[in-house]
Length: 233
Image 1 (tube, rainbow, N blue to C red):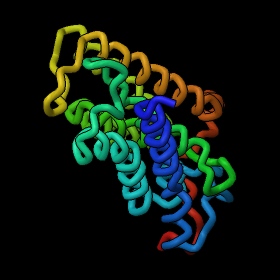
Image 2: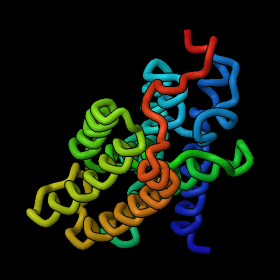
Image 3: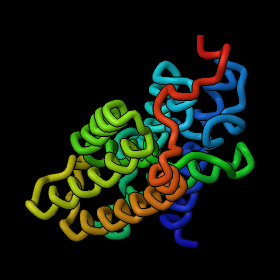
Image 4: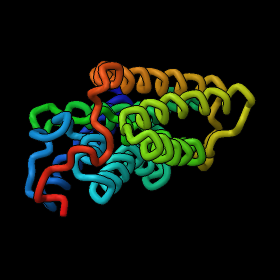
């Protein structure tokens, strides 16, 4: 097997394992002694943690989930300085693949029986590693929408969709992405990344299908509406 392909496969596996770290399970278990899979939507993600336990635990979970989406790309691109891991040619960047692997790890975590969250924060973290301005804008938009509407699911979907739109606009007006040292990323490569990001966003929206049904039925829980008794004090 070509060594470049082997290294890429290894990097994808490592990215998945990083993304699979279930902070949405660890934080409630560590600080409140509860299994988040038994509360709220039973989803292992920052959305459910925020809804069940409030901002004190939801925000750190969200930020850690973002971090694990960004970490694989940061390590490969900027710390190891190994462009051969994310290139399929001299100018074609496929680093978003590692962010996607982390997002899949978040959705299907090997550590907790292939259960997980909806990859909103992890996906945004991957975007931050590629374009920090747009990624951070997505986080800000999430909090604004979530806390103004009191619905985390609305904030998640709006932020995810907006990030994809902002990245498409950025490329269409020829905005320069954050450069990789000693590497010229082609315009075509940016389009490849955008297609991958768009697919991730579609997956995130699909993962919220039950939330859409509850919103239409008026049964979607609001932030802090049904915190667990005696453990949120």
